[in-house]
Amino acid sequence: MDFNHSHSHSNEDSFLGPYNLALLLVAIATLIYLIRRAESRNRLHYDSRFSRILSGFIRMSVNTWHTKEDDVEITDTEGKILAIGPHRTGIVDASVVTSKMKGTPPSFLVTDAYNHIPGVSSIIRLLKGIPVKAIKDPKSSGDGVLEQAGKVLDENGCVAIFPQGNFAKLGQEPPRIYEGAARLALSRRAPIHVIRLDGFWSIDNPLLPVFIRNNSYYRSMLSALHMNSVRVTKCDVIDFHLKNEGDQNDEKKIINEICAELYAYFRHTNELTARQIPVVKREISDKTHLTIWASKVEQGVLKKQLDAAAKEEVRLSEPTSMAMKNC
Image (cartoon, rainbow, N blue to C red; front, side, top):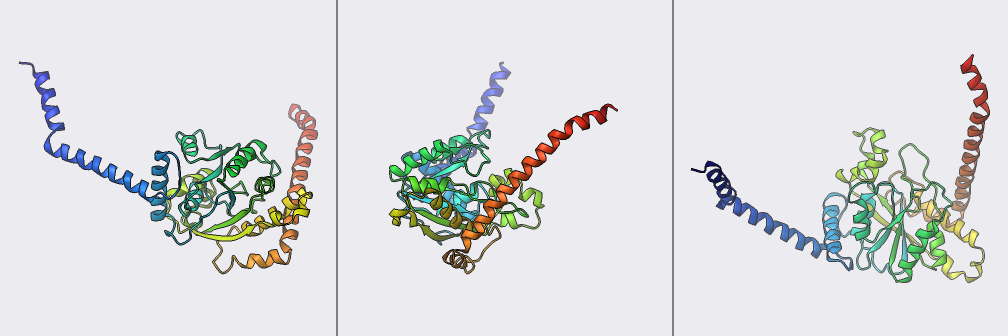
């Protein structure tokens, strides 16, 4: 008697028994239902069906875990720039804004700092993200990236930017504004819709140590595992650069004023209420925001000078330090 054949046949019968077969059919039916459900929840016009399904899954999970559904709707974004801040997290920030949108899908400018994690770059491509090299110079316009973003706007698409670039960390000065958003708006004559995000329990939870809440990997990805109640506020539309034809020649001044206005809305890295946010408009109307931004820029210049002086001191001290070690 072939006991091995008998034992193998017994295992197959066990695996394909009525109970396991029923479970398999239920699992397949559930998966099909979830896929169809996700696609039906998608509200963005992606060309790829897989992208529509992925977008639907993101919207379902975000509305369940991170924000209220349909409290704010972002529509009519063709040919426009969305400037989002303060930049607190990665996945949650982008997913919440996307979940509020309808129609044209946003092309987010996304750092390539996490592309070494499997699947990240593929998801970015599927959702029309524009990769940005991890850079530190706030005056770097990233011409190649801006050219890609400009093509999106030329095709009546929507570009979404976190103009601060860096995360707004607890206990640290608010990041300054990069010039990319202003340069893109000026070159393509596109309005900037300013969107503020508040309500991040994942960042304000006192039960988590600050070093965890400030960790870049936690901010960018792991914070998505923490429940939030993110509020989206449509603050303002920056379009003065479209109306004042005579000022187009003073590019530097326009870029500075756009950055100043964005900084006015995003420099408050603590949570703001719905009543507090409109107060910023008074700061902008009386031009105080320009003075505040000028101070921020000057601080950046002084910091660079101090850092350079410290490095020079270390360099000049090296011969003496080496001589002392040899004594």
